[in-house]
Image (tube, rainbow, N blue to C red; front, side, top):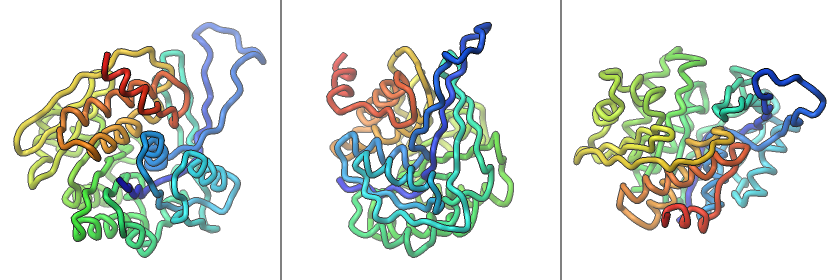
Length: 312
């Protein structure tokens, strides 16, 4: 299956924090630079899971942009549709990882990153020949990227190409400012699958209940599947036919950065071979569980590792 992923690509600077009470010394781990970006992470994970994937997005004409493109290409992603701009910088995400692995994220620059410069023509033309389109809400905050993503979703729907939408609302940073809610709702209508963190994204978007299952159910309908990711507890998928809940896998957490992106890739990869929602949720949970046992947002496991975990 050929998947087109449209969205953000950046770099992640990971800083592992010392244990509480530890004396800072020169022996602390060195900061590490990884390829990042929610959409780019999903694209890299999809190729690791054996799918053909091309990434569509914009990076700055700078060293971080070149690093972001190179890291995707190294992962096997087709980067021929990645554009560069001289008018904005590639975003750096500073990831502080405390001992429990539950990362803290800081974005620089907080607004005006190069991913927002994505053009409509580039996004729409890339959909041609795709079997699946996956988009990220990160690019829905600013123009022209928001119009480009929505236009690509329209193009896919017109061609009967399934569309998945990872919310990536980041409400803790920017809230619902600048009409963002209406843009997200427009993207939901254009989606076949909507994915998001249960309490941080699905519940605020639905705005009817603190119960993620009820919230996800209210967003489903018209053939749409809504997936609420529950972290270590697994995930639940809601449609007009009801809800399917699959528990997570207990693992020793090292770094949760990119866990949702890994889940997305596992789910999409499974849907390429089965229509069974429960099985696709199991794959999403398994890929995410294995990914968080390793550092960095691109720690996607190989297919045989996922199959071994599923077999257990």
